[in-house]
Length: 295
Ligand SMILES: NC(=O)c1ccc[n+]([C@@H]2O[C@H](COP(=O)([O-])OP(=O)(O)OC[C@H]3O[C@@H](n4cnc5c(N)ncnc54)[C@H](O)[C@@H]3O)[C@@H](O)[C@H]2O)c1
Ligand SMILES: [Zn+2]
Image 1 (tube, rainbow, N blue to C red):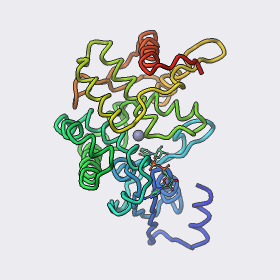
Image 2 (image 1 turned 180 degrees about the vertical axis):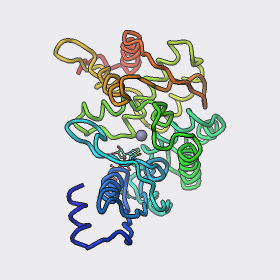
Image 3 (image 1 turned 120 degrees about the vertical axis):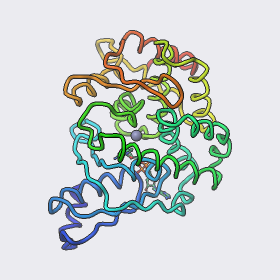
Image 4 (image 1 turned 30 degrees about the vertical axis):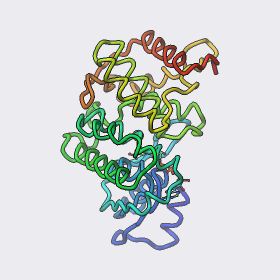
């Protein structure tokens, strides 16, 4: 961020200039934060280059950088002047990165749009191979769903506590921090969603058959459905990832709000999490993954 600001100063960029940021989600976050804070904000044109940033973060209104061991602790809400999704960039990514970004596409489908999920399910193999037409359609539809939620959802700047687009993210963000940021956001979101999907099933809110369909699409996309960090324990024996709920509660000012699924394309906000049940879900996922190692 400081490096970006130095470039802005050295280039003599003024309040009537534009900053054009071309890159993936992490780069757009850094450039966006610098653009929002230099001269109290300079117009920003975002050109996202990854699946994840074209389908999700590039059309968002937030930027964030990690600070003092906390994911996205520093950042602003800042609407980009424009975002340009150029599909030529999509196809220049390595296959694993290209495919991983589809985690956020699945996410927005399962919280917002059942018929889009049906399409993703029907085209999962083509998407796993990142076939051009399927990938472009998925990215475009996801970007539109994200943008329309932000523009028409009634809380673009997150003054309330409801964050449907952050489905699965409380665990995802915390696992990223636990991993020292070696675990990618897309992979963490995939695992975080699987946890909240299973919790939703165990609570009786989500039919098991619908959960299986979602997990099966994630598997076809070669996204992880478990990570050993979920089972990691602190020195006093507590399940470490559950601290992510407390971090999220603190972030929201003490009143926890987490979206759980009630069906494909539908969710509901819950304000209490049964920690013992969440731990049971983690154990079940670990067993299903055949991972008996406690990290
Ligand atoms: N601000 C938000 O609302 C928001 C939302 C979701 C995610 N994010 C953030 O986005 C980040 C993840 O973004 P990402 O998945 O784009 O990964 P990334 O930004 O970490 O990029 C991954 C790698 O891909 C390379 N790359 C980018 N585009 C390429 C291309 N077209 N061809 C070849 N290589 C290319 C980059 O140089 C980088 O090494 C996380 O830090 C996450 O926190 C932010
Ligand atoms: Zn995300």
